[in-house]
Image 1 (spheres, rainbow, N blue to C red):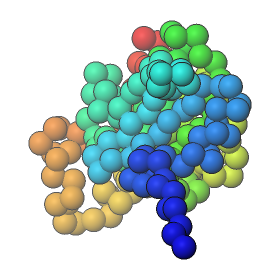
Image 2 (cartoon, rainbow, N blue to C red):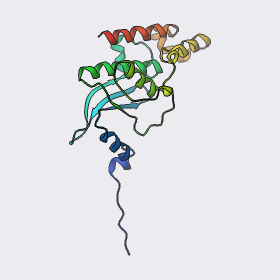
Image 3 (cartoon, rainbow, N blue to C red):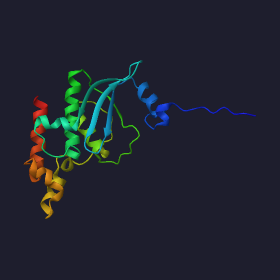
Length: 186
């Protein structure tokens, strides 16, 4: 007696697509806010389903904040928040006003970089369903926790890139507001 083994879809085998979640996203008939984390930046995209493959309507990486005067890390909480604001601004140009969040296979804790990006997208004018309790506090979004740590450490080796870029981490809150204002006015 022989048994036939059913081979799973390639993207499922590779751990790249959760087809159960994807079906739920597609049934909503709304564009998806896709958020992917890397070691050095955050990638945000608004995608829409097309029969021949998903279409990216607009995309932003946190590295694109340098055009608006961001001198700090592209991977910290304030940078992710500002990237969300920038994505919402670009989404308005392609006439997207609401979306649902697609986080993929990554696990996320409340108050993490991903939720900072979602909060930024909401503050930028994009309608995204999300739980308010999962967002980071306003102080963390403005970088107050980084500024206080910068002031408390004597060995500033982890802030050496800020020194070469002539960025003062103690003034990060002011810089977050300035960059946000530049994004909203552009």
